[in-house]
Length: 236
Image (cartoon, rainbow, N blue to C red; front, side, top):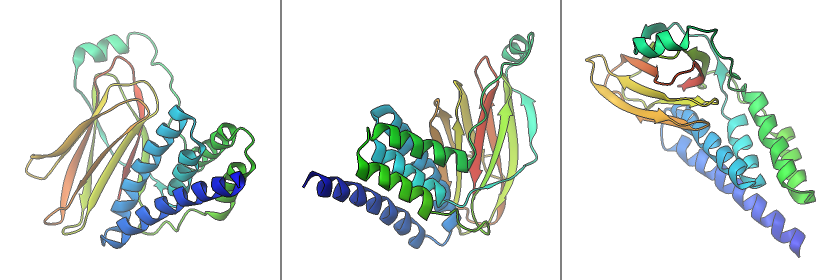
């Protein structure tokens, strides 16, 4: 009886996650924008799962992230000084080292490994983690979200200019893995701010909007902390 109940809870949780992602995709022509939002959801679920030792949350996060179709890509950026005092203080000595955000595959493996640990030997949960790792392959690269992993120096801002199509959803997610004080802001072609937010350690800032016309937007990632900060920027 207990075994059946565990399986029911696990499969119901994963079914809800799959239904959510499908509903998002069907309700909007910009499927890759929804994929960016799902990446943010996956990281939020993973943070919850790690904090609460919840293996189902971690397996759900792995399922979403593995199906997101993220492509790692290099982007041109400008690095500008935003705070001369912090910039000078931070670079008197050698820049501190910090772990880069994990690749998509590594993050999925990490989520599933921790889920198995938190399962405490419960065979149904371990089997579910194993099945998730085997049955889900990353979807094709065409039209999927793009991810750039980089470092913003202390007292600096990294500035990207990215074009988005009109009348389709646009989405940007920013995540940092190290202890940091990083903020993001998005501006349209007229210099008006579309959205902004701060990124807390291990969490994600998400911005979604619908451009009226095709336009190039400015994405500014500012490091207000005393140390350099690695980040992952995901866009559709």
